[in-house]
Image 1 (cartoon, rainbow, N blue to C red):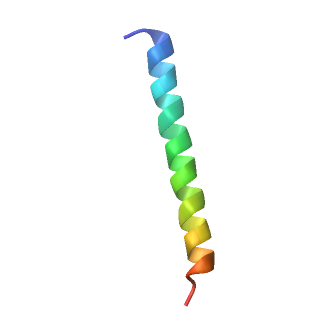
Image 2: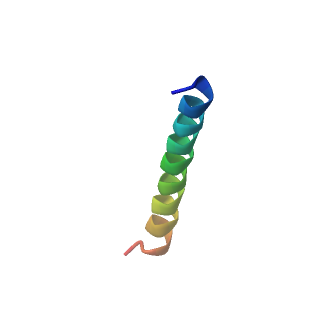
Image 3: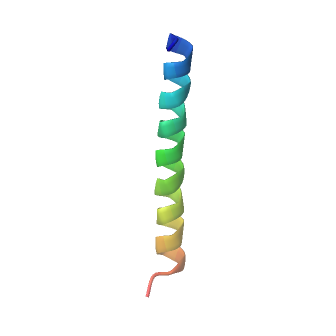
Length: 33
């Protein structure tokens, strides 16, 4: 495993977590009952 691969994987994980967080936020605002 090269450093670049590890960095890319960590970036992907970070982006995925951020995306899911925003999606949950948006769903929470839309589907607030």
